[in-house]
Amino acid sequence: MRILPIQKNYCTNYTSQVNQKKKSQNAASNIINANFAAYPQKNISFGGLISPVELLVKKIPLDEKLASLLEIALPGDVVFSAKNLKAAQKALKESVDLFNNVLKRFFFIPDDNLDGAVAFVRGLNNDLEVVNLNNFEMQIVNGEKSLPLKPKDGTYIENGTVLSIKDTQIPIKYKSDANLSFQRCLFSSCYDMSDFVKQGIKNQNAKSIKALSKDIDKKGKQISFADIGGQDAVINNLKKGILYPVKYPEAFENTVVNHGFIMYGPPGTGKTLIAQALANETSAQFIKLNGLEMESKWVGESEANWRKLFHFAKEYQPSIIFIDEFDAVAKKRGGIDAFGDKVVNQLLTLMSDIEKDGDDVFVITATNKLNMLDDAITRSGRFGKHLEVKAPDNIDAVSSILNIHTRNKKVDPNLDVQKISQALLDKKATGADIAFVVNSANENAFERLGIYEKMENGTFGKADMDALMIVEDDFLKAIENFGSGNKGVQNRNPIGYTK
Ligand code: ADP
Image 1: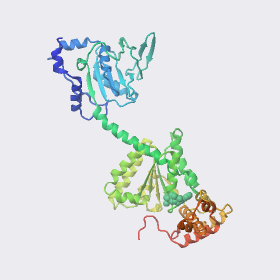
Image 2 (image 1 turned 90 degrees about the horizontal axis):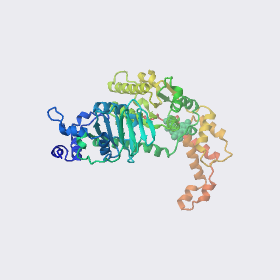
Image 3 (image 1 turned 45 degrees about the vertical axis):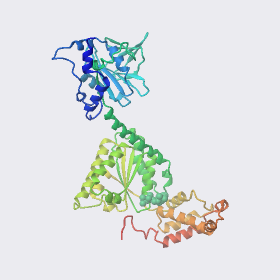
Image 4 (image 1 turned 135 degrees about the vertical axis):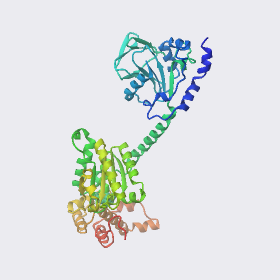
């Protein structure tokens, strides 16, 4: 009964005390690292003397104190005990890997007699886990049976079991025998991090939701190496340089892995396709950028944006950053453009960080003007692999691209593929040109069979599609038109060209 006035003074309501601490809480770098001292507790000793209340509270057995807190512990709450807070915090830090859930509130019970430290975590399903924070074994005694709990290990614990920590036996009770709700604030301290973790959870959830789109995107057309013709040498190089190190890291432990690649060659030869296929085959996050767009959009913020980009790529590794028209970002400046030089330096620094940290982040760049690139980029080991992506220069390469683009089309089975391929080779057609010719040939077949006409007068039907067949003549016409129009490689301006 003597305790009543003090209850009124110090802890009329435990929740209001917790709320008060919430207000005084400042942002801590992480929950367990948080400075517990920043959450002040009411001092119940008087003038250095141990108060009668304190003595009384000390007499409450640890198991009752524990039970009284386990009774109110919510998912994400931790109840922990040790001789003092400092020792307990150190032990928690060392065991941080054991906690799978976000920890929101910490209840600390100091106990002079406890030789070691122990924590109880309320899980999301309301289950209770005990964590051995010590460097020695504890015992969990259930009737006749005694099970060891290894140092820095955790397990679920049931009501009625007994925890044995050296000489201390703690019967575990989910509910205390006595009603200690008024005394809780006297024998324990609460550190409430709920507000602090809320923002962290929100950020993490946003990231997880964003990561979903990675899989959603993949449901679209999946480019694979089988969709690329005539570029086997480049593909093999990239397989050895990126695909295998990502898939079989153990084989590359003692190897310096190159993280930067420059693909060079005329437009429309499959550079983008190759990078995309590689990302798919590696199951990597694919980030596609265009040097020209970056130059105009990132004005004044290039360095910060590069850092953000790499940060993102690291977070979602394995990832492939593909930079098309790289020359717009990394062109020779000869020291006359200090800003441009800074961007190049920033890029090289980020690349060297990736290398140092052994991240699965690869940067594949593409340009049709290799000689325009800054020496700092081409000579540095950071972009050490230069791969030429040529327009197909032999009949096999052309016919393999032709096969890729006709495989889902209705083509005359007796088509002289060699003849068409030779005609395309003579025109120095690139992969993009071949794709264009196949589409034109398809249109020619539509014209020849009067399909557009039927569509116009409403008589088009399934039988027309069944009768559709692209024949040699359709191809030859398409090749002729392609050569005389401005789609031919000879007449085409490089990407980014302005008059
Ligand atoms: P680049 O990046 O070299 O300018 P792209 O990869 O963007 O060229 O190619 C454009 C299109 O041309 C591709 O989507 C594809 O349809 C076709 N293409 C280009 N090269 C090839 C190739 N080697 N094999 C198959 N298709 C190709």
